[in-house]
Image (cartoon, rainbow, N blue to C red; front, side, top):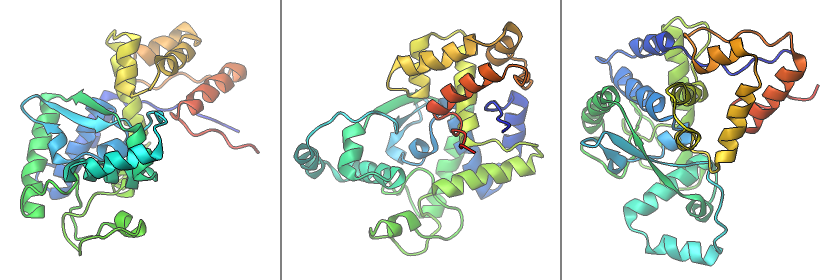
Length: 288
């Protein structure tokens, strides 16, 4: 079985991906904003598609996203149900959206809920501003009841329907789905002529490596990744330290080239694959 290390996109590939999302088109405006926010924050797709307009701080150039992988606190269900009942409509809407995307109940989601304020660049802020203007046109107003990212073409909230929840009729502003976001990344990668599609996961990895390249400490890297424990981040970084000097330099200080092959060291490659799979960076290899 041949396994590859997770591929970190180069800065040039990211620029090509953005160039494939023209600002003069509706889909390009939306996709560009979503890609830049992901590349700035490292947000997981579930986290990105769970945020609403009131999670955006344009003057402060930041967005607040949920940490989708936070461990449960273990609060009793009656307590969680009571908290849900006391929530305002916008707060409850945030929990329900994340619950739909994560496949958990509203109570389970609330037990794990933790919001993270994530800074964004001026470039991402400009792209987000362009999208917010277009979004108002698509939805007929500010529509704080809808997620930040919505569909361009007429559609329905199929996720809500599948969960047995009430959904509005066909409209241009249905909530954007996980499959829609991932499909947009694949399509943009194809238009950009990339030999390997850039995924949400590889963008997240791009953020992590960039943060560590810039000399940030372990706790900062943990916060960027949204790990619940620094031990998880430390395990990931420790696996990088196990590499030979040339490979480690390319990974952490890299010049945009792909990593050298580890085929000559099967034991090291197997150990690294196991650690990265445990962290969710790559899929665990299937037993043959």
